[in-house]
Image 1 (tube, rainbow, N blue to C red):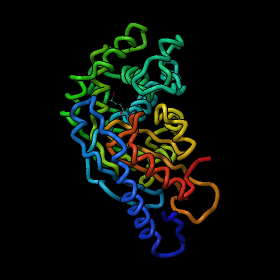
Image 2 (tube, rainbow, N blue to C red):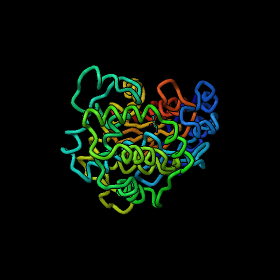
Image 3 (cartoon, helix red, strand yellow):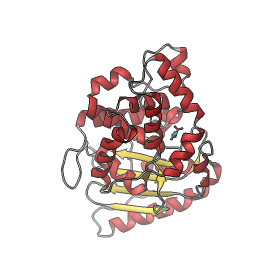
Length: 331
Ligand code: DON
């Protein structure tokens, strides 16, 4: 397969990048057959397993879109990055980290095994369900809508429109998610929750049901790549110290029990969701080369066929190929 080396001095650069990405998406689309669409949230089962799409937005304005980029899909666990950021902006980093740690679990996203077995005094990290539900309980406000308002405002600043909740996905998860309710009761008994359990779970289910596109995820990734500063308006949207922790959490915990492999083989901070989305962040490069996206980029992927860990099977392969071809790994 082509390796994607382009000469950045030619006028055709963007077109060449586009052609490479189109070829790669077409190739990895065939591998969607090796995964399975999430069915434990019934509404997610309706997604087309053979979809695959990617948006890459570079700091210098290069925008590449390929494959199924028109779909809206629920953000699911990718929202955990945004609720963590919102909670830190609202309550302060120290306050949040006293209540949720920053350690990977090596377990599935919905496991509380380590929390129980190791007698840890707080959930391991905000990107597994126990930590995310605890984080949702830390958001200010008495109702789920009040709690989520700052998260909506943050997203609006980044993606340029107010996002919407997919009510069908929300109801589907709310009415079936016995595991998250069980986690919630466990957290409540241990004294980790700062809000009413019902309001906390409603907040969590709603944040997971926010609709996004690959473009939205790429724009969020670009702001994180750019240390929290909007690339066009130069506004500081997220304080740098919060962005730094969010990115390190994505690198160490963002792909759950596949995070080590993802860090080794792809090497960039990323966060997956069970609807098939991946948010990836490519920080600016220090070494000189002739490859694209030297000044950093955000990447959004959609590929609903998942692997055993609940990550987009073809999405990971596509990201791995792109990262290797363009030497995007941090390491
Ligand atoms: O809580 C859940 O199970 C879902 N709302 C989100 C899980 C998820 O996206 C895990 N990601 N791969």
